[in-house]
Amino acid sequence: MARSAFRFVLPHRVRYAEVDAQGIVFFGNYLTFFDNAMTDYFRQFGFAPATHARDTGADFHIVKADIDYRAPVPLDAEIDICVRAARIGRSSLTFAGEIHPRGIDDCRATVTMIWVYTDQTTRKSTPLPDSFRAGIIAFEGDALAAG
Image 1 (tube, rainbow, N blue to C red):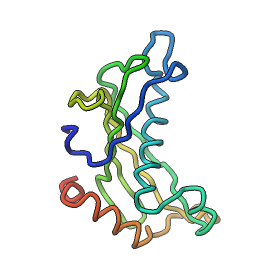
Image 2 (cartoon, rainbow, N blue to C red):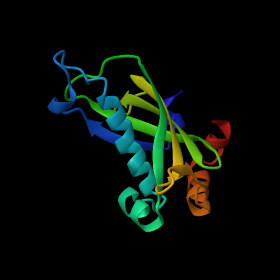
Image 3 (cartoon, helix red, strand yellow):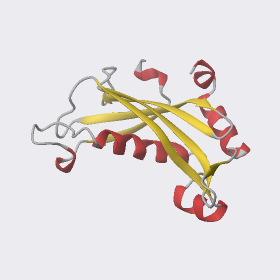
Image 4 (cartoon, rainbow, N blue to C red):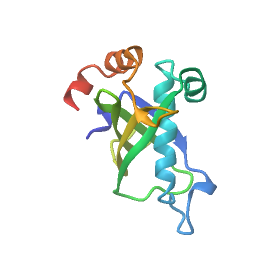
């Protein structure tokens, strides 16, 4: 999808520790990039992962992550890590994400991740909080409906 389809973007400069011997981002680091972006995405809705889990006894588990690598991302590249909620279920969220060079519509990688909200004692799914759901719907608007 076009970079403009994402309202949330986390800027990042690729660091030496994130690349492999070929000088490009090591494949496993893409998940870290997207995880960092989704954590900041959540913070807009008042969700601070560590305090939320402690205060409510519920947190997210990642149950699926699919990545398509389209083009290499080199050391010191300035990139935009774009994420958006693509679907909200009763207890799950599906995210779409892309990596682009800073400010440019040139997708280098895509990700689809599914997170399930769970009771941390039972490890069973539990409904998403209404306020959290409302925050995502208000932020994503028509983009969520189209996702």
